[in-house]
Length: 215
Image (cartoon, rainbow, N blue to C red; front, side, top):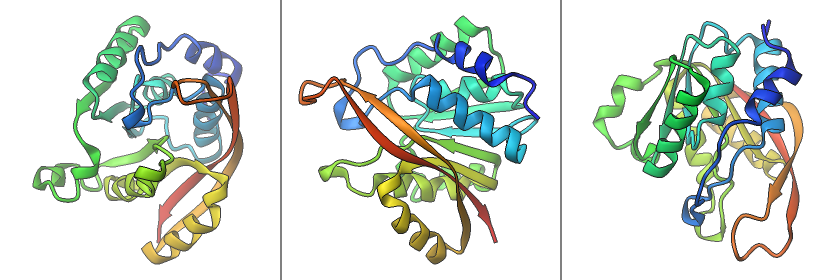
């Protein structure tokens, strides 16, 4: 069971600094504290997959999920992030919260399948967390690429956020990959106006929190 109450977890995560200059080609958006806290609290209270576990945070950004997992008792959390600016903010957040059991590695997670060095992380983590890019017209399917890497790294379970509109596709891919999948929560992702091409101040997106385990 989580030792930290949901309300208190969300209050802490509201203090996590986000991207200073988000990069559109990386689809950088801060995971809202409400989404992150509910996601992590559900994972811990329903499945006991954070406390005392070795956790990976893929596409960790500024560290929202990493910090939250640490607060819920993870033994250690390693973030994987491609952007050096995001990693700097991640480390500033780590220092600000005085958290010692999280680290961040700069790497292109999408190259893990072809990089022989990734074998050291194969089935290495108890739990893998991610809020992957949802994908643009130029980058369609990137969320599923992130998911395949997460399944490669995890020993026990992977938790990932995806648009509700992709639910049938994810079910189909799970069958192809011979992994068990279930939607454990339905959430509303309030996406703020972040880039110049955004016409609305906010956009409300329906997202599913998925849990993937192995047959």
